[in-house]
Length: 457
Length: 138
Image 1 (cartoon, rainbow over the protein chains, first blue to last red):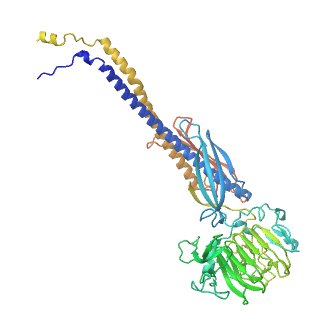
Image 2 (cartoon, chains in turn blue, orange):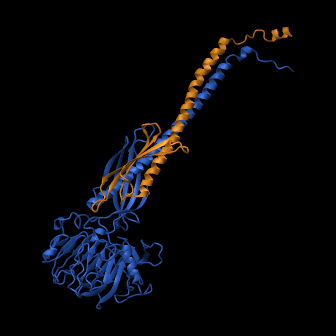
C-alpha cells in the first residue's frame, strides 16, 4: 500500500508556526532564567539587609547598656537612635521591662531586666524589603548593686550622717524624696532597682537546714509548719490558711524558680481566688511567744499576725527573706536580731540584714518592730504607729524612736547598718567598705546591668 | 536517471542565498537577546553568589571582633584580603574601629565597628555592616 504524501500546498505556514513556537519556548526560558537570577540577587541583598538589621539591633542594646553604666540610671524608653550604615539608613528602638518567668502578671524578677531591641534597615535597593526589621531580646542581670548606695537614718544628730550617702529622714514623719539625697540615684529615682541575690539567700537557708523535710514546729497552731531554717506551709485540715482571698482546701506546689529540678519544695501555695502569691502566715496571736533562728527564705509573702487584744511576740535571731512582701498585722511585737559574724572584729565583721523583701514591707499601726540590723525593701517600707506601742526602730541610730508615725520610705533603701549593741565601738556601715552578705557592694549609685542571655525573636 | 531526478524536483525550487541570509539574520535577531539574557542571568547569579560570600566574610569579621573582646578591638582602620578561590585575594575587607565613649572607671566604653567588603578593583562596597560594641554589651 502506498501512502500518498500530503500535497505541498497543505503544509504551507507550518514553518512560521514552528518558528513562533521556538521563539516562545526561548522567550519563556530566558524569562525564567532571568527571574531566577533576579530572585537570587534579591535574596542575597536581603540576606545582607538581615545581617545589617541584626547588628543595628545589637548596637542599640550596647549603646543603651553603655549609657546606663555611664549615667547610672536607665535611659527613658523607648531608647532610639539611628545608624548610618554606608548609605543605608539604620535605626534601633529598645524597650524593656522586668522578667516574669511565668508569664505576664505572674512572679516578677525585679533584678532581671528584659531588653527588646528592634533594628530597622532600609537600603533603598531595588528588590529589597522596605524598612526590614529584626528583633533581639537580651536579659540584663542588674546584680543588686544599688541596694546599699544610700543609708537612711532617723533622728540622727551626728553631722557625719547628715550628708550623702547618708540621709537623715527625720524622726517624725515624712516620705523620702529625691531632695533627700544629692545623688541622682537612689530610692526616689525609680522602683526599678535590683533585688538581693535571692539564689544566695536560698542556698544559705538550705545550708542551715538541719531538720529533715517535713519537720514541724506547731507552736503557732496546727496550721503552719515551721521547719528549722525554712518556713513551709501545708494544709493538714480544711480550715487551714485563712488568708485574704484564699479558699480552703487544695494546696498547690510551687516549683522553685531557681532550682526547677529540685524535688525539695520550698513552699506550697493554697488555692487563691484573688492572687497567686504564696503566703506564709506566722501566727503570733496565741499566748505563747514564737521564736526561731536562722535564715528564713520564703518565695512569696510573709505575714506576721498578731492578736486583736493581747500582744503577740515574735523573736527572730537571723533574717527573714521574702521575695514578695513582708507584713506585720495586728498587735504583734517583732524583734529581729540579725546574725553578726566576727562581731568583735570591726574590720572583719559581717552583719546580716534583718528583713529582706523583694517588694513591700508594711508594719501595721498596732505592730512594733525592733531590729538592730538592716531592713531592705525592693519597693517600699511603710510603718504606721497609732500609739506608743507602734514604732520603727533601726539599728545604730541611738535611742529607740518610739512613736514614729506614718513613716514611709519609698524605693530601695538601707536603714543604717553594722551597728552592734554588743560592741558599740565599731563604726557604722560605710558604703563601699563592707558589703552585707548576699548583696553586691554598690559603686555609689551606678547600676551594673550585664547581659547574660541573648536570643532573636 | 536524469529524467527521474528531473521529475522528482520538478516544481520545487531550491533556497537561494538571499533566502538563507534572511533566515540567518532573523535567527540572529531572535537569538541575540536570548544569549544576552542568558549572559545577564549568569552575571547576576555570579554577583549573587559573590555577594553572599561577601556577606559571610563581613559577618565573620565582625563576629571575630566581638569574640576577641572590647579591649582587643584596636581603634583605627585595617584592610585585609579574603579569597574567593584560594590565593586570588578577591575581596578587600576594610574594618574601621572608632571609640565613641571612653572606657574608664566611670564609663563603660563604646566602640563603633564598621566592616566594608569590596570586590577587588571596585570602589563601591558590596556589603557594609555597622554595629557598636561595649565591654558590658552583647
